[in-house]
Length: 188
Ligand SMILES: Cc1cc2nc3c(=O)[nH]c(=O)nc-3n(C[C@H](O)[C@H](O)[C@H](O)COP(=O)(O)O)c2cc1C
Picture 1 (cartoon, rainbow, N blue to C red):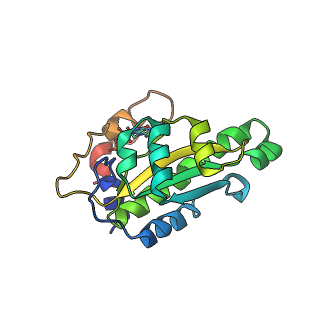
Picture 2 (picture 1 turned 90 degrees about the vertical axis):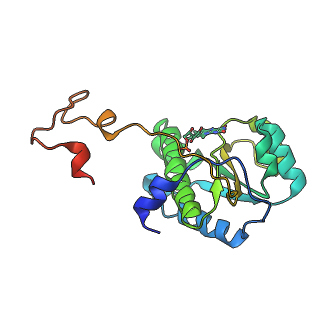
């Protein structure tokens, strides 16, 4: 799959096929995460692959989102920002979140490439997730990812903001490029 297709085809999916996805594909997607950029090249995010049904039920309860419990695998991303804070002070907190986001996007694109689907779950009770997976106190749970194969009835891709709505030139809110180029045409 071309990178452009993976970027454009990734979408949040909350219904999973009954067929179990191949765990090797999930491991491959986690492998893609570690190639993300990271402040000082300190990669601080870990990915826990959860297959234990009871734990998955507990993760669904922790997120109060029932569909999480319907997945046969859930990946939980956890970061430790302590070394980044030691090296970069308060900015370490920001660097940690940004690095986790970059790593997660690699992970999501690699899942998409392998025809697996998920939804980024950011809402959950941190303490419940930590207790379920024995995650130490000081670490941050970034997100949960219930993973499956898509059902025959496909989820609709959401409408996205147009390029014109997210781009400025030379200063904030300036929508005109110096060269008279139609931006939306130049990328296709
Ligand atoms: C930080 C973050 C937190 C999110 N938390 C949730 C969540 O708790 N539950 C959920 O159903 N979707 C969650 N989402 C998924 C978004 O709702 C989804 O990405 C958005 O609606 C765009 O749809 P798309 O992923 O299909 O492009 C989250 C996404 C992000 C980036």
